[in-house]
Length: 640
Image (cartoon, rainbow, N blue to C red; front, side):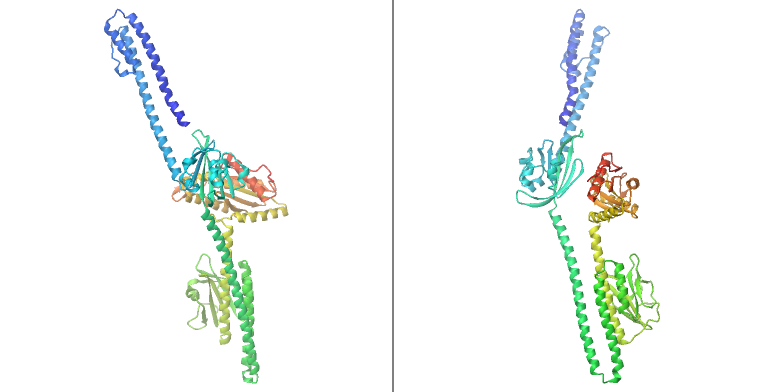
């Protein structure tokens, strides 16, 4: 239709020119008759000149009009004819130039249409294009491979014929819903999101008529002509079956990892139990030996001391077993620190010691807890610790050259350093000091220090692993903000607390303006940089009182406990202005001024459930988009 309109616009001057030419011919003939009547008695040559002029004009051969000069009436009339001829010739040249330009424009348009058809046809994603009547006007090669239906069999088909290869029945699909919403079929999709009035994104599992099962991610958008009218719609389908399989495998891998940790913990408990049984047998043997040699009075003192040491060892093993069970039951570091300090005071009652952990940013060991009367250093440089450098247990005696570390307590006769090593990483150092170097006691103390240090290392690694898994489950990997899973927990918690204490909870739902244009123009890497910069701004500005979550795509949701609608609106405006003033540059690309739109809603003003309040904020966000974007709108309707 556009091409026909352009052809009509270009042919209109030609038609007017033909009318003018015919009128000029008629006028010329009339004037010629008048001149013949007036100049009947004049010379035959001027009459022949005028006749030739009229004939040339009538045959549209303006370049053949003869020149005539004269001051009489015939000469003046010939001059008028020559002037009119020049004007007509100029008009014809202009019209010919416009016709050539139109042919060039039509050729460029045809070339552009051929390139667009090639792009659609060779796209790796399956594409379907329909017009406003529901007839198929494009069916690319990827769609042919997906459905086993040739393009020539589908082009021009209507009445939902394109749904037959997928569902075996004629029914609306996503490309139809982008033009006319069909709520009855929207619920059949696993994911269905309408970002704009005529842009849909969905995911669903399909068992096709051919028997092939796949999971697809599909996008449908409306197509517009040059006058801004909807001329049809396009749907793009991508097979994400393998991606879903990988995600399921990752979840299974995490479950297997948790099972492995549980099994390792059970094995350690079993080992501790066997050690306790062995210690019991040893205690029984020593008791029998004492009974058999009680006649030897001279050895009584030595035997009594050994029994005392054995009792200490048994108590220490029992405390070690208790330490093991309590450590692996701890859920955070503060609880684990209290358990370690309490059990070490029981196991090493006659010694003193300290637990060092790695500094997160510097090559230092920091003392996080200690017991006993020994003097300890609050920090220690990692290069100064032989045990850390060699990654092995180290025993030092005061006054000897092989002292393991330069400790400030010169009264310590014996010191044992145990590096906390687990999962290929050195986590810190466990240090025990004793004022006695008696061989039996010192050996038992060393063995116990090794066991406690190794147990603490495994427990720390287990705690770090659980914390890492927890953070991965509630954090968005791109922006490091809380994800939607954590959002559901925190919103429910804040709403319950607000209902209990009669407070307000406000929600800000933000959406980047023209984010698709940024991705299309600069690439997804620049788009990710923009999202990270916005996330950093939101996190920095609301760190003390708000909870920022990535809601999905370019949408962010901020939970503001104990905050009214007016306060939330003011804060949203401040965030919008701060983001709007950012001079953004990434990967040597400088973007124009960025902006976002936001909707504000509150509990219980706009609903008594999380879904209702979030939906109210989403409606307000949609109003902000309709008002031209880069603005904040407060929800005005209560959604039950």
